[in-house]
Amino acid sequence: MHSTHISIKSANENSKKRRGNPLKPAAQVHSNDHTEHYVHTSLPPQKFVKNSQNQVEGYPNLQKLFRLKEKHVARHATKPYGCRVNIDEMSSTLNNWIHSDKLVFEVVMIGCLTDNQFIYPLLTSLPIDRLISKPGFLFIWGSAQKINELTRLLQNDGWAKKFRKSEELVFIPVDKNSPFYPGLDDNDEALFEKMQWHCWMCITGTVRRATDGHLIHCNVDTDLNIESENLQNSAIPAHLYRIAENFSTATRRLHIIPARTGTETPVRMRPGWVIMSPDVILDNFDSVAYQAEIERLGTHLPPRSEIEALRPKSPTQRRGP
Image 1 (cartoon, rainbow, N blue to C red):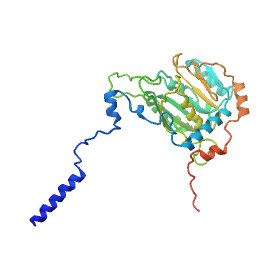
Image 2 (image 1 turned 30 degrees about the vertical axis):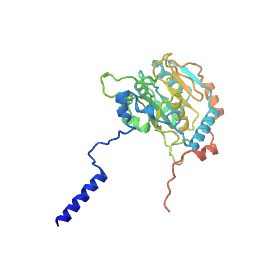
Image 3 (image 1 turned 90 degrees about the vertical axis):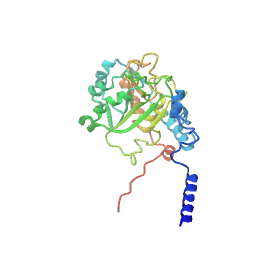
């Protein structure tokens, strides 16, 4: 009996030696502990994301899909349009587009990557649901603080009946030296800094991933985007335009920037978009010419078999017998 007890004890000790003590700290420091690395070097973790320059690196089919979609969108894009309007005149101008010019857009983007935006007053004074066709898509970009302020708007019953929040996108500047860095919050002594930008993507009307491939292409881009080194300084990176272009097949796109960005943060033109801003580089929008161009191009991109074969698709649900 005594010898049996000794053998069991020895076996337990040997087993502990093999397993190691779970309470004992590891002798080797984890090489991917970027949080600890940030404390000592001030280099944020996003600096070490390997595929931030090319998110589809290592995926040849997705790379081919991106190239095909970029060419397809460019081939069926209107010329770049700019509408230079002061912030306090935006609501009246857009109302005139709605009632007098009968303009509608399938894709409307509001906001940019600057802090001094008047998004909430614009959304509450504008019948945005009449500016966007059904089905249509609304992208609202803002800092973490601005997005939190808009939470009560999305939770409002009147707004919820017209739009439903579908996705949340995030854009992260590479470091504090980035032109897209939002700066500190009101509390300069805060332990954590909110350096990311958020986007709410809302849908009006009915659209289904599995059956409406002629309207939307889902799962092409990721929800998280990190600034790449080759981005131009602008009010909004070109990649954020491409997210909307890759998602919706519509050709009528409007971007509203309710903020003064100045010359240091230029509002650059983009083919296929009407950009409304107090500081947009070009002021050439004409509703008659724009609608004539849309009539020639069509309101949606024509289907292309190569893109359909490569793009990710949602499975269709089988109905019972």
